[in-house]
Length: 383
Ligand code: FNR
Image (cartoon, rainbow, N blue to C red; front, side, top):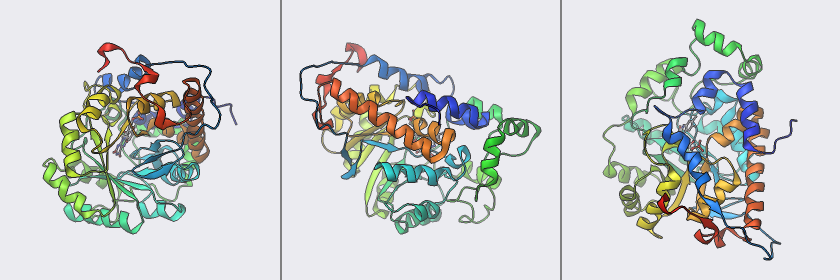
């Protein structure tokens, strides 16, 4: 086992282990990637206030997200095609999250189906929904998530069409990979990954293939999906979808105070301030930078979570001290998964928790609830 002390270590191994097209799929943003880069670099602009001579014993990173107890306020974000990064990827990530005590969110675009993840977990996970034109399909997906005991529906609002990612187009990315000379060359470079995939039970999108008539394999799926995102999605439709779900609803992909107010008016349990990890509207400001105005706009009316650019426990602490009740991580756990499967996801969570815990102590805080802007040095022009 290599010595892993930071998320960057996992990323290095991940890069060596998976074919370039899958590394590029995760490690990219849309167009110039400005928003993707700033999601991370904006965390560096926020500095921490060191405090001394305060009792640092009996610390805890425990908290709640939408009323559920969490070992730390960090959920695994929905990530499409996770099962292409590592065989059985969604199941492995879900198990790591469950054992650690943080929520796992299964993407609509997963390789393992909702049922397959439910099979190997004992606690409820969260299900992320993309709103599709085929309403029957959306209703069936919601029903399947209910039947599997999912405890929250995360509706993603910022991907009704795809922000162009140059690398994916240039790599000819599809899942499972279409075998052209170029993709064969790409995949063949990573034989260890290939062996893992050969052993994988399924390489199709379990939430779609077999559940939509006319979609029998993943290449048809790509065509179906690209036609399916509902461009007419509006707040009325979101309200109707929310009625179909009896439990908690999280609206993800909100980056503007006006939209946040709408989400609060609809009665969402939480929102995720997010720009989809810089994969959609390039040129948008980072999620961290938009967080304060959104918190001001909604007050206590809705729980506010955020994601984008989190690569350490210090980043989590900064988001929480700014006022977020919870955070999500995407790439930080995908690096771990691609590097070493379930163990790698666990390691990513351990690294983040340790950094969060020690940073809390050095800031003179023992509980996350006591963290606030008093712990931060925020540049005047940040908000
Ligand atoms: C995503 N994200 C995403 N979001 C979503 O709602 N459904 C999805 O299927 C996906 N798929 C996806 C794939 C990949 C490879 C990435 C990197 C991201 C966005 C994700 O949930 C989250 O918002 C970002 O990943 C957060 O940014 P960081 O933590 O990756 O910087």
